Length: 313
Image (cartoon, rainbow, N blue to C red; front, side, top):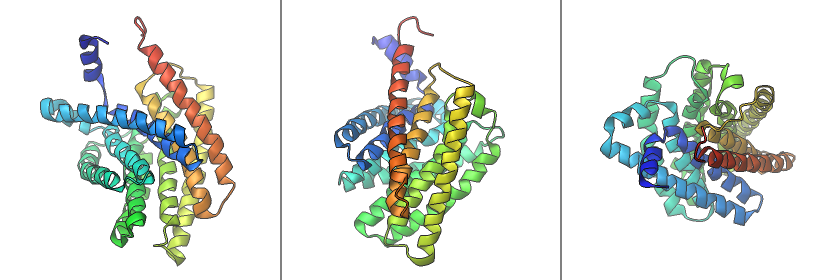
């Protein structure tokens, strides 16, 4: 790629590109849960490289193009920066790289209130599926915070995770109220986040449920919330898949990475919820859904490469 096309590509990146980090990031977590360590590390490497690239773009906009930075920070897709950072941190925590994970948590926690405020302040009716990123980013913080709380036996971190979990649950109906349901049959890919937001809610609930911090009524409530969120996300999965079959959208769009992420998140939520909630049949279901997500990621990569061909529209 020559310098001119590289500059054009760089300048054309949108906040939605953050989903390209989220997709391999969650696949890495899911593959680790089923013992596919080599594939998991390969997906982690892809996610890490893409995260560094997009972090450089983020910094370049902040320092060199404040007007564009402010305009893009107002869009829900900007919250992919928070979600991608927490997913990368969660995988690093599973590798035992707790300090790196904690550093990413601090970065995500600093970005989250700023971007969330900017997005909510410019909220409007009839939003695309990216609207649900207000929930995804919040629950991503829960997953990483709860994991680090369990690792370091930090009660206050666990309490913060629980408070954020409750906020994330409340943010889902807020986003749903503004979601344009026509996106289900006409969306370019990010409409899948309607289900993915519930899947990451279930994953966050599963991490909290698995913690020894919560017992009795609190544990029962978290288990119930996890299973309800996962059940509704599976209903969304079926509805959105049926809509894709009925109204195919075969052309590549950067928002297609926001389709892969919910597919992987639903699978990972099933895998994590199985032991946490004591529902063993969720594990084989999660394994099947995970390989579907891997296939979707490969297809999206192929579509991206074809779209980069000279003369491609």
